[in-house]
Image 1: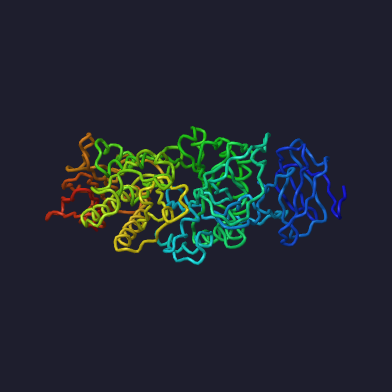
Image 2: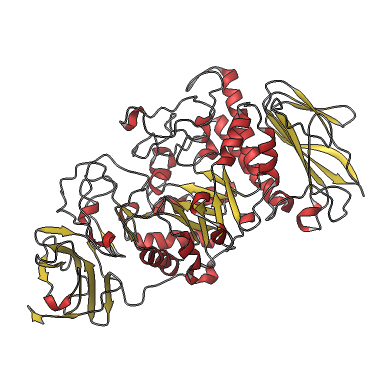
Length: 614
């Protein structure tokens, strides 16, 4: 068919989206009502008013129209229409929007750009491929991470802003950055869900209304956990220019520093398994991402782990999203909130927590990796865990009904900020204690971006709609925040420096290689014996470093006293051991004159090392 200088012919309908093939552009999309006129609106040379080009009937395959069009200029943008309704291409990989993040109608206003026939990609050889046991995960929200004025970056709230902060992450010891949804999603919470089309490509058939281009700001979902998204495209609102190039630059910059980029994916219930895998493959092949963390219930983990393109990228699932088959794949990692609950309850002095903590420091899954965290995006920040007893979600506008009912937090005696010096010192000591538990846990530790310098959400444990200073990371530079930053940085460095502190297998608590000491052992007031009864609030752990790589000599001893009273810890005599030396301590910890006992004040942690006598 020829019309107005254009040649339109039928094309194969899969995959959806648009692709340039030679001098033709192939368009394919699912439409909600094929009884109405369906077609595309072409925007030539940056024009703001488009030209309607209807699809002929011979290009229809069920509810899908798919056509090759010859004669469109190279720089043509487009949207689809169905009768009077307009919608952006849900399968688009490139495009630009009217307005920035939070502008009313931004998501609906996307003008897509055709993808090239052979998209550029990042080769696998550029990827660091960091083993889970060697990794330090760092979760950030692209916008919130640098939007606050204290971030002092040039491109606030963007991929470019994250690039400016890579030196900070590198110094901290981060190996792998996990991005909360960074693909294009509809942040506008004021809009109501519209009807969905039928068929296997339902997600591609949202009936988007004409955007309102009045620049009005709206209440935003800054997290991005929504099923209304364009999964193939880096979020245009997270870039100062071409979001595809900005995102590719971020991946390249991280790889250049030997670091990884992992994406969180929250899939629509209407999305087929085939489309999910196609989306994941797209991010790996086109941008070179290093893995995915699957969020939500609509995951299809069994099919995802079988995909051959994904065999050497990290795949992170919640424990309830998996079964034994999924967990048998070597690139799979399991996320579970139970370790966080154990650590927080032990921290605040709950009864019957020592046995769970010993298990956390000793055990590792036999078939896959696991990640452990003390704070995540869905819950209180690290600082808030020791500042608030209750959640403070009033600003979310849901009368406090949203968010987890409990965070297992303790305010150290006063709810919220205080100028009481003793409470401030106790809170600092408690966040040090909690991060020590995290770094000695078996599994890949996770830091939530900003926790390393005590950023706060003012007790809000569900700030999904707070596109403001509540959720933005505050780049604090107070004496306490700087002290805590040095503490967590040194903990990470200690963990990385000794293979025995980040194993890829469970400890046995036996001397199975006849080194003269068990690989790991647990102690308390007395050596070689840790109390695990409900009334116990303290224990210590001893690592024989030779069990790490078989060559490193010496020992690391960490004492955890979460009792509110002082306790004495007996230091064990170890084969070939020299003098015990204090490495780090969150509170007062005095070594006895004979060097065999440590008196640790209440609610404190201390870490010691012992070399081998020559």
